[in-house]
Length: 140
Image (cartoon, rainbow, N blue to C red; front, side):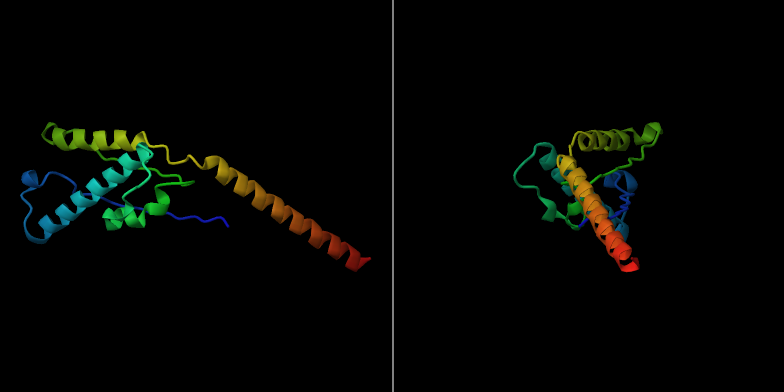
């Protein structure tokens, strides 16, 4: 069967903690976002290296995105970068992260997906022909 999913993940707030001066709940949220980004980076690195073990279970984010980060999936990532000189460090880190993510070939099973789509289309066509023939013989 063919399966589709759409995941929209906003990792806003992934800036350096020392620069933001975040405290309390905001600090905890920023730390959790940074931990998730680190785990996502580990997964991207493992996929890029075609490692036998990909650490999807290191964070809730990567665990939930597991089906979207491998196999026949198509993945699109947007990275927001600030043009401000004061944000050069975060912008550089974001662009380096995006560059590493860009080098991952997630679609190594793409030909398999195409073959499954063709098989499903052929099967549906066969079913339509059988029903048309049955309808034609019933009308005769």
